[in-house]
Length: 387
Image (cartoon, rainbow, N blue to C red; front, side, top):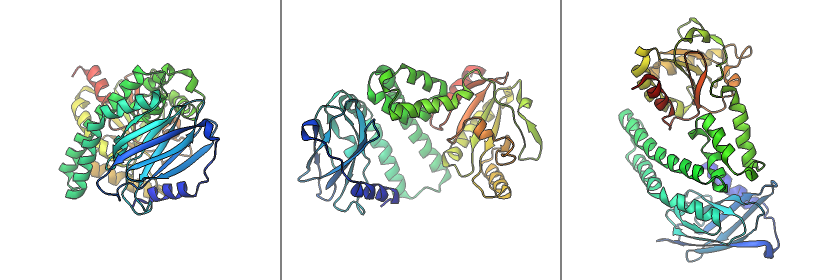
């Protein structure tokens, strides 16, 4: 079993359960249809309320049914329901199911083989989220099936198969993300929208993310999740649309001194990446396609690498090796070099990789996105160049 999962279960087992008066509790009950008694034999539920207090509880699954009580909440909060076989340290892994705790009892009904897709009823937030999950259930099943099939066929090292796999899963997940974003836009008063927005940070252009959060009900602003979202927005404000990209200079991978001002008069993309970053490397084939498509029109890519190395020599070696492996011979600079004098990654507020920032001919920010599963850069370039 996955080591991380084992640690989570161990923490749940050892964590003391807080108690509330039964009169202030709501009931969570469920039925999981299962072909084998070994599928799901125990459920574990946890959440942290808006005061920072942790709650943990568990229940046995008998004949496919379970029930437990949790304290009612003044302001709705999300919690995580996990599922294990008889031995939580050595059993099948299941995706967890999010529940929303307010004041209404909750009923769950589903299949033990896919508990994360169970039907959930009880309170507006659970009803809302259930409707959304059921609308994307086919996508969830298709993606799971594709991952399972890939593992069985053991084709992880087949380059062409990997590209096709990434393309197909990205298209499916993008559809799911679009449906979730549509839900957020249509339901600004729902706590589910805050819950989703927090998790979909990398699926939004920075400015759109800030505007979407501003449209949500203000009563969620002071929650832990709301404060975390606002913190992200504040950090990325330095690269808000229309702001001038901060100047810096470095020596390129080919040994030439480069200053950002040299790109004035060109549309260019700042790509923050690292040789260690799987999603960064996975996004390179498509970025190469964009580069080849628009470079004749003056489009440029500027790669800013952040390497995880103990020495600058080691960082240089890994960086240049990755450039050659990926075939990304555009302008490349290494943040590790002269980082003490000017940290490019820190100056641009980058904490997740890849982060891509599109800049116009005047050196002003067009957009910022921290993901490889969106087409925002593609859309912006099509609008700029007309094709």
